[in-house]
Amino acid sequence: PCSLFQQMKIKEFRIVLPIGVDEYHIAQTYMVAKASKQKTGGGEGIEVVKNEPFDNEKGKGQYTFKLFKLASHVPGFIRMILPSNALLLEEEAWNAYPNFCKTVYRNPFLGQRFSLCIESVHLADRGTTENAVHLTPEELRIREIVPLDIGKDVGKSKEYSAAEDPAVFRSTKTGRGPLTGEWQKTCTPVLCAYKVIKMEFKWWGLQTAVENYAMRLMRDIFLNAHKQAFCWMDEWYGMSMADVRRFEAMTQEQMKAAIASATPAPAAIAAGPAGEETPEAALVNTTPAPTATATTPTPASSAEPSAAPSEGTPAAESTPAPTPAASS
Image (cartoon, rainbow, N blue to C red):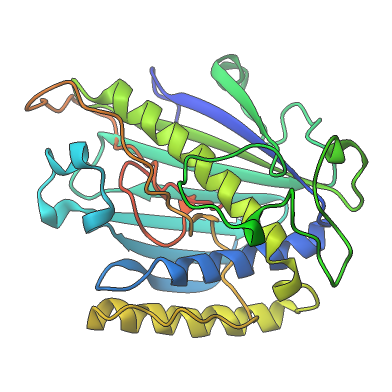
């Protein structure tokens, strides 16, 4: 799923946070669960099929398998080429935090034409590690590094909330924030989330548009997810992983019921456990998709779809990816 294709795009996002390595595990898990629940309802959203421990050559961690029911969240230019029964995204995630997190997205309809893989590593540094995810020399040659500043950078979302703006928010429990100026150089504690996206979409006439859209969407997903993880600090700070797991289980049951009944999930979410999968998946952005220029595109031989919406996407949405996440 993460093999290197001839025209694969590789971007490495580096997100510095004023959060410790141990704290981030809880923060990310809480954020994914809460954001996923907020985006589930009306018969659409994320369905958690499996959530269980794993133990393999990569280490020990948590494995999840999710179904993203996309429908109305899919960009119009994607709906033009996909039947309604194909608007389903599958996400598999292996989270052996902090050393290894991997999320893979697939679409049964697109099959080998679509490939999206997110690999993440979390280190107690300020984004200075050259090859945190251990890319090959060939992969490094085509990698693009994209630093993100949660205190300064903005996404494409039209909705703004001062409560979720790190440049304004100050934690009453820890005193951290607001994040202004050159905070990344001085904050303590500190952590950097290194997230590498490997993506390919082979569909004649749409490949470039979809891949570019997916990468822009994933950038916004990562940015918004980590803004929320920081600004929700007073909700998750002081929780144990057991607390987060209980919260995660509770939200998963509520999301399952909301999808099955086509009734919006309750909006209120109390501090509790959240899943730790990919933050991408929990924050799928509904940013307008690029305008398609081709008509009745013809699928190419082998490749895969664009997983922009998910990495990892958290509440199941957009199709060209999801990217997420995932965090991994």
